[in-house]
Amino acid sequence: MFKFNHFNFNVVDLEKSIKFYKEALGFEPVREINGEGFKLVFLGDGTQNFQLELTWLEDHPQPYDLGEVEFHLAVTADDMEAARKKHEEMGCICYVNDRMGIYFIEDPDGYWIEIVPKR
Image 1 (tube, helix red, strand yellow):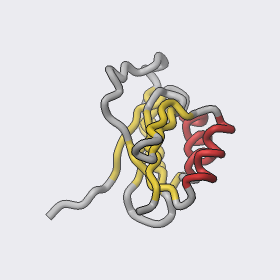
Image 2 (cartoon, one colour):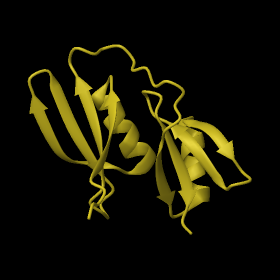
Image 3 (cartoon, rainbow, N blue to C red):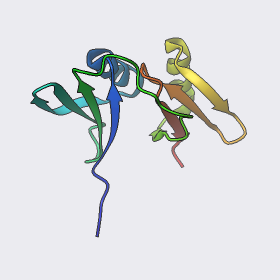
Image 4 (cartoon, rainbow, N blue to C red):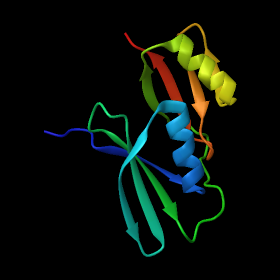
């Protein structure tokens, strides 16, 4: 038996990313691991054990090559109207699919996060 534990995004500016995830999604740091040349910050939503790990590497100051960005993290919004308004104000919406009732936001490193309604 397996259960989800965490998902990782490598980031160039850790503080900028932490601020983005807090403002855009309400995710808060729940633990950190500091090592020689790296730092990991795990973010949680306060309701479940699944976490988003942000990895900062000292020797990687350039943007990461995300390929065609054919992967994403998805989160559920309790109030899609309020969420979309907030993300429009932040200017981070990168793709909208009104037919499916979803949209995507883009973080400072170019990762996409799908916003889906509570069903």
